[in-house]
Image (cartoon, rainbow, N blue to C red; front, side, top):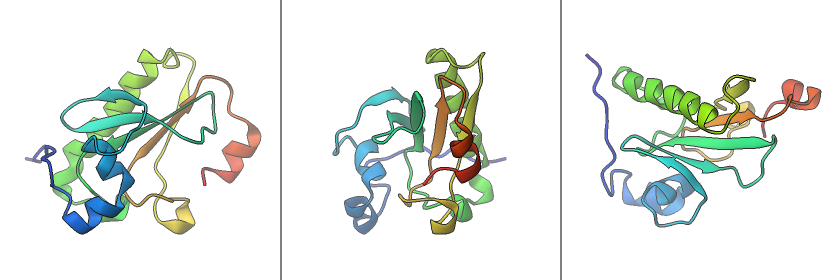
Length: 135
C-alpha cells in the first residue's frame, strides 16, 4: 500500500532547501500569496500568470520533477491532483473548465525544479497557450 508522505521542517536536505524557492515557501521562509495549505501541499498564486486564474499546487516534500517520483509517491500525486480540483471549484472555475499542467525538466518547460501542478482557467485559454505550453 502506498505511503502518504508528510512534510517535516527540514525534510528537504539543507542544500536543496536553501536553493529551492518552493521548499522555502512550504516552510514559510519565503513569502508568497498562499491560497490553500494542508499537510501535503501548498497552493500559491503564480507570480507571472498566463491565465486569469493561474495557481501552483506544490507538494511540501521536495521532489525535483515527475522523473523523480517513486511508487510510494502515488498517493501524494493523487492528493496534488485532487487538491487542484478542489481549488478549481473554490476559485469558481470547476464547472466551466480548467487545465492542469506538470512540466518536466528544461525541455518540458520546467523552470523551478520542485514538482508542481499548474492550475489554469477563469476564461477560455488562448490558442497560443494551448500550442506553446507553459515556459
